[in-house]
Length: 100
Image (cartoon, rainbow, N blue to C red; front, side, top):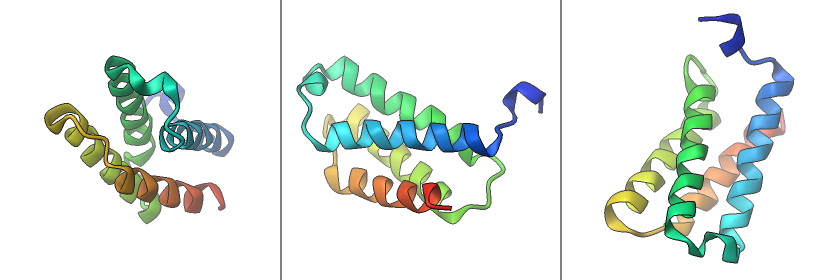
């Protein structure tokens, strides 16, 4: 793994906080996400960030957040639905990660 791909604790926390902000915006029914393409891109970005953080991680909350965002991504891409309960679960897992 290259040095550029390793995350310091501060970088990890910033990424978690960024994903949490996106989750909050989605849960608030922000008009910004009425555009389906933007919504899909946002969920995809969250998926990629959490995937990067989850690789080689043993943090159960982080792994659960990634698993749930992967499920959310599937629902959005294949069933055209945004499951808010899954999104709330992602938020709760990430809050637990950020609080450490």
